[in-house]
Image (spheres, rainbow, N blue to C red):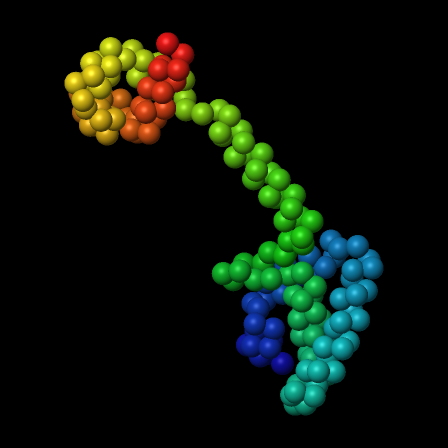
Length: 163
């Protein structure tokens, strides 16, 4: 049987099939046995669907398909193990921890220092009735300080409550 036919049946390239075999070798033995059992069932299904496929080819393709169903998936032509619920939960905890660290960290103190160095101008402009968007634009054009209006409003509220 030629490679093209294997590619059509398994819908994987030769390199991806080799990666599946490596992945299977890294699994615990009980999981490998489960894959073998699923492959036997799958080979009978393949034989029923297309009896013209030689026996050893259908068994090999069934083994590859059983391995894909056991946790291997191809995304954009690259092989990845599918994360189980426990692994997904672990990743979500990591993401939550990273977000919490970012929120705790806040803006860089350098930006805060630069803005506070021009705080007198900001207070003057705000007292003249100017909003935070035009003040942020003024700072970016005239003082070369890139900041958002929301950050200026937050600093303004902090100064109001603290001072």
